[in-house]
Image 1 (tube, rainbow, N blue to C red):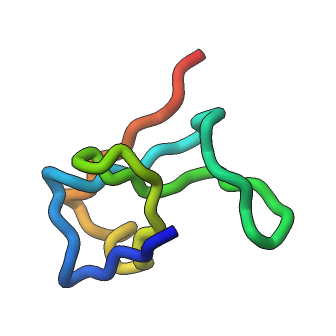
Image 2 (cartoon, helix red, strand yellow):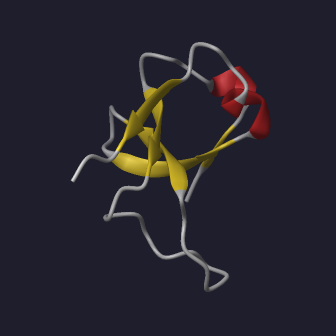
Length: 64
């Protein structure tokens, strides 16, 4: 899964998703609670910690 750094971050392209059931498996045997999502390529990505603090980051929470 690609990691997006602050210098590559585009708030129109990347969002943070929380609690979605279609998250991929964690390579360490755990489960993800939130992941970045590339809306252009429709793929999950890892976001750097600095992006998580960015006020322009849009957050989408799963609603059942």
